Image 1 (cartoon, one colour):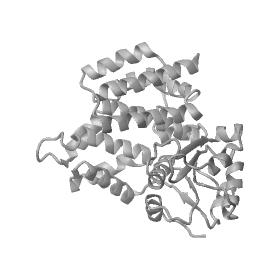
Image 2 (cartoon, one colour):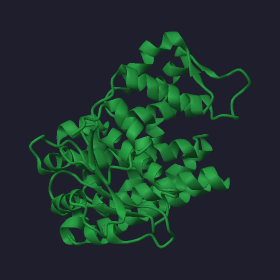
Image 3 (cartoon, one colour):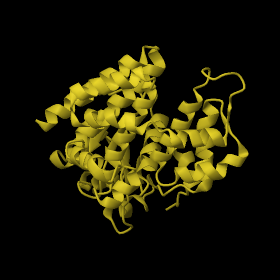
Length: 351
């Protein structure tokens, strides 16, 4: 057994080792686990969005049809190339088909065509999943724990560099504490800062350095109240209120991309809380509202944004972002269509 360090984990998901046919990516930082699983899928597949190359399951899927995993692992891609089977778990429940599959992989069983990626929240060392993956020769277990100051700084520098931005040296001590907690939330804060400064090609010449004033402006003006007026009715399935709030936000100059980021953050928050068992501590770690009417609304929405519905919502949001980047279509129309589809789905689930 080779222990995989955090730095080795990032290199492994970016450049997968051919000896591994199964991966367990888990830990208390569910946002980091999700990010590493996404990176691994992208590294293994030429087109991660090809439905013939990627099969996805939840623990609910495996409980309702335990044989589905073996069938998916044995299926060959209709378009050629590699295949990946991705499973998202909320714990050990429903993991029996996974344990059987790892045993088959270790035993060099024939007929296995795909690579298995299992994503989960925190798991105990005595649990069956870790006890199966960690000593395996052809499987890797990647633990995802909270970022430290250095890894948060590395993440910030990487995302800023992609947009041609740098951060003023004296501002790091004010910036890094805002990122502590969860990788998904940290990434959201960095993206919020990037949107405030403007994407590459949108800024004035020479306006490429982020200063303390920029950070304080972002902290003082999240636009959360306006976004709450969109996010609340969206995930409640209240289409009339959503339509009015979206129109007001656009009229006030709110960026459709900022709204998309808020939608994605809320989806991630639902996923993080479900993965941690829905406890109050999970609410705090996810950044979800914990007091007042917004907290009650969030907890109510948790009841029907789960399992396949939540996975579908995450995929729709990803598809919308990809469409904006690739097609050049009006972002306000794309985001509007996304929110309408999500709201209608929530409305049907509630009724």
